[in-house]
Length: 345
Image (tube, rainbow, N blue to C red; front, side, top):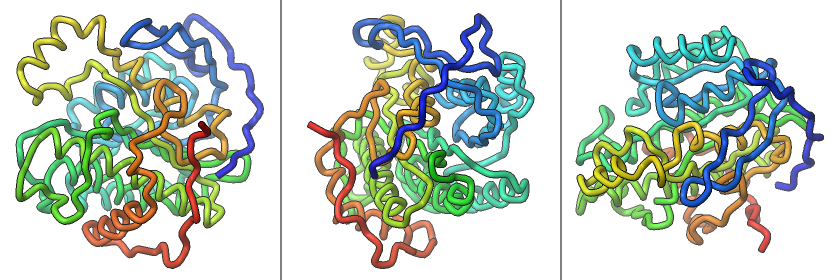
């Protein structure tokens, strides 16, 4: 969907940004990033954001950046002990009291529905939804709904959450200032395979394969969602953010040699959570992305995702199957785009 970029408004640069604006974290050359990025975004105190998995790691840093812009930030997560400390620290560091936690277990369809009901009872708008939470390479196990955990939490949980919040996002966006859905995927999607005949991996389970499939599904979902939003003329955009290789606790389930490499060399070759969060923040607030959706963003630049993610038929098949699995109606009807936005070569 061709968007009309909003004019860039200069933010206020300061030693302690607080609610004045937010600056990109200093970049590191080599594997961790490029040269330092000087972008400063304007305060956005009239915006409301939900960040899943915002109690630690990339999600915490994302929530903190958005809070620095003055946004009302709601952290969705399932660890109430961590949440209290996360909210306290963000409020203290950003001087923004409009940061709160709402319980949401993305591995439970019931919990997701309860979260949405609690949020809607607040009768506030929603301008930014960051689908960030996830698990990585966990042993084979199932959610309370019987889904393989990578599929159920990483993908189906966010699929259901986004769909249940779409009406609120539509009502909150407007021409020239769209609401935004930012879904965090990973470069692991490039080696993923979507097995529609066995999404649960019941015939042959691989932690890496299951994780890669969930990240691939998130890209397919985002592109199809953007196509539907554009076809319906909705003031909502959907993009994918790839944070890169980030030093977080997600690596606790990977093979021990990988954990050893991370421990010994992570300082030089892994991004910090603050650096990893920056592409999500960029996707959530950058004026250059106003009205622009269906993009895969890495280091704040549009990048071409795996070729199969542009397969419209596969997108539709996954969407329909996901509706069945989460128990929501497939309301797309006959409204499908002829094509999706592609990266210009």
